Length: 375
Image (cartoon, rainbow, N blue to C red):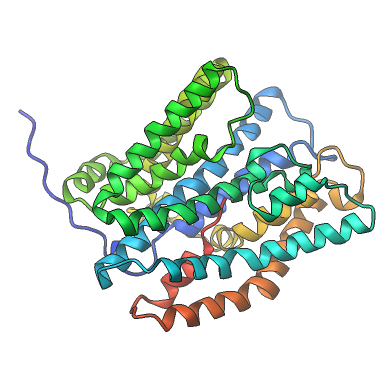
């Protein structure tokens, strides 16, 4: 006979304060992205096909960013609702604008200067999609190729708070499941109709972010949180989930149909379980790894790094700034300058704006909300 579930207490950070290990996870995600893009740059050491496949699978770093964003944004909105009884959508948009747009505007300004100098060639369509966050609906020049994930996140930031505010937080689980099923149906229908190039379209990839939203909704329910804790607190949870990710990657290489229809939601589900597994662990090797200073700093700079790395990690380029490993150093330097000179002043402004609201949320958590990326 199966013993009854013993309810587990909610972690204190679920209602207020900094979520542990989250910056470290962002650090892992951006390192996966850097590894994937570095492998095709000039000067990268030759590796075998097996290692190359592993590095190529670093694209799941973007999905990890998506899951983190869905979980964090939804958790913070639930905190606000519990505290004040409503969600201030206007303040949400202002905070998102102050966090994301200034650094992105400087990035686009530099690209425009490079184009005037004849050092890059972006089309009118590239510029239009970059300015409207619709890069994910066409194939842009390399310098803007990574903005597809930022575009999807912007669409999520635009729609999700309105839906949660209108339907109330009690509908988060239902809405998340509806998004997951809808994306699966749309991808399958487009594939069967012979349509190509839809893997980065918003309505075919929002299920990955929705999986993080689903996790945030489930862990607020004592029964589901207890079930998740029972699975995720076991010593073998991390290696098992990592093995599942490897298996999913292998299956995707063998079957295009599987990759189109099922890879994204299944991988997002595993990443969501992995996210909950590591953030509820207060000790152990995983906790120490994700909270070491280097990885945490990488996580803090992850948005900046993601934004600037594409400019330096150019495929098979010969310019010295784009030679491995100097290109990595240049990307890190550009990201650090962006964070300190551009983003930090706007983060301070965002914090003052947040503190003027009817909220007692610690500033540390508001700073953490500012850090979630893309992607």
